[in-house]
Image (cartoon, rainbow, N blue to C red; front, side):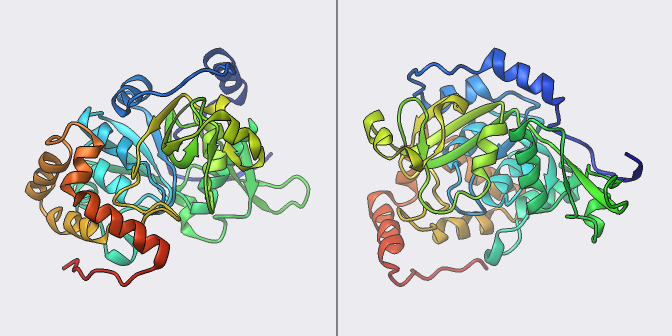
Length: 336
């Protein structure tokens, strides 16, 4: 095909599909075995310095915050992150100097709550580099291509904006129509983490509500850590197999972490902890504030349960559950 234009963005996470297939055959087992472990062990075993990582969920919804905090606690460095619908997770990781390179689709803001002081400060100072830009749809197609085992997805997406010029995609002459077509490269994260409503000990996972791009992400990631609200019996999963969004054979670790998405929400179970998010956005306006937050909520506790106690414990968690179930009036707070 005739190449018409190349994006300026750095290509990350791409592998020759044949090499990627061989890696899976050599490193992923289809054996039904117990994969449960602690948050600490999952991060220690499956995430290394320099990895290209991806976080499941969307924005402040169904995010594996237990893994995010553990990455900071274990002081992972030089990580490149997929900035697709990445909000609180990427802000925290960039602020902690764990992530220093980002391919950005939707990053550095907290949606209606305002911008992200910690991560924006790192980018503006050059401590974190935006190495490429992309759209949300194009990122999902990077995962899709990786899942399908093909080198790219052809699309008209990105042709009409400057985003394509800063992406890692390539515009070619379509051999059928003779018109320009954009080739969006596949991506294979070294490690991904997805929070689900329930799964069994093998990793067969169910997600209630919209699954965003986690169907594709779970199948293209080289290593996949599942954090879950609860672990259910295998027979429960087998009764309704069509509800299994993520099958066991793509999963490397299963970690039970109730409220593991806090302060983000878990659809149908608990609401956003707006008070805690507001606290982070206020205190992270300075690097000293960022360090104070980490000392209190990450390095000052030994596990996620202790973190939840600091955030208000049973009383706060019960409020968040009621807020999600009954849409009760929200407590007042301020981001200012």
